Length: 260
Image (tube, rainbow, N blue to C red):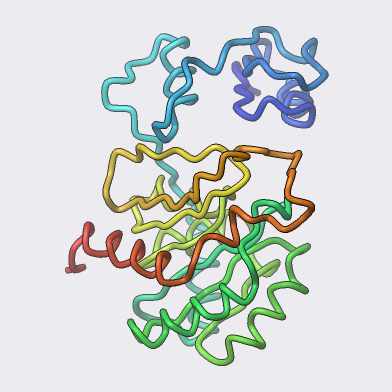
């Protein structure tokens, strides 16, 4: 039984899930999505900000919580950590590794597949760490293409983990690189060195920690969100080059320092 449900997406489906929870109090962000009646209270997203998690911090303040040291965290369940260890062990990974998260549900947020291949090869040559690719079941075909082109050293776990196991894998990663997707953003909650590639969506340029690096080409048409004007070229993502991503990864790792 739930006392409170928070909808931090503002989508019809997330409002519906809040209603299905049975919580008597259901609070969510205002948006143009239908289903306002599914919530008991709508709140604004707060002032426009380039600070990461600013919307959630604003919501926490409205709920009367202390936000002076606002730092969202994730704690994987024990069974998810065990599942992650088993998956990594089956792939022969015992030490440091890099996670790449190339996939989202919107193509305008994707980076080019050949860039992921080049990045994987160059990361492997630079650090000698294995790479783990995460994604959902619907990403398996694209993941297989990247895996074949990248040759050895890239472990394809797209569609082969639960969300909790994916989180537990990210928790153990030495470095996380991904597009604007939930799997990549988990790296922030786990304080992992992280590089996030933004294009069609609004980037959070103030990350509050140097271990999180944000890359964004800053095209005048961005953020177009779900209405790209580039005829499917996705110029904003194509403008992000592999050397820039490698350099951002090096900065994130340097900011964390050596592991004990």
